[in-house]
Image: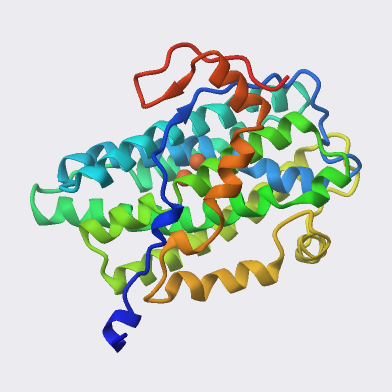
Length: 316
Ligand SMILES: [Fe+2]
Ligand SMILES: [Fe+2]
């Protein structure tokens, strides 16, 4: 293989499957405030997903709907449509956890208002002249989404394999939400990167947008965990120190610092392709046993966007 070929993204074709949205729903009535028993920090660090994802994944859908007319490859177009359907459902499912948090004394509004501003205003549509400036801003956001999807796939793979959460007695409904979502992130992990390659694929843009996405994710995540810890009426010492995150990573309750750092050069490798990470087989196997996904399947609530009806009743 030549040096040039060594530097090209190497997709693993066997990891690709057709995508379908599963219209799941969850009942939170029996989920305790600290759904990882006795461990508010782990609970709240993972709870940050419920703050970031509703606005973040709505933004993915918003951007991708604008991009669709520029997709000239029919297979990629099918993937993007499947991706839109899955992300719309993820956003809704995490949004539906927020009333449950409010009932338990955790009002997320001060934080979610800032997240909404970030995605709707700062990263939203801008008044730009048609032509190059508009296309530049669209490509920049497509590249940002590809970088973020590197981490959603990383987290999806992590949660599918996070046996320590089961051993600690984590709430099964919350685990099913996280693993159903994580499994679909693994299923569609190549779509955002393939779309980025299709529209632009410039290496400098990939590095620049990765740096923005990584910095923003780390900042928002630790801030969200600290927000929840400070707001939790049952926690006396509401601090969240870096050492606490590090130790939980070592115990398998959160992604480890080492695994997160190792994921950086992989994304920045010129030969990187998301299909080299995680396992579609494992994701599909989880979805075949997920209580929420099975309930959606039984109710006929799966398919492409617009093909599904009312939400089914999932893991309760
Ligand atoms: Fe998602
Ligand atoms: Fe995703």
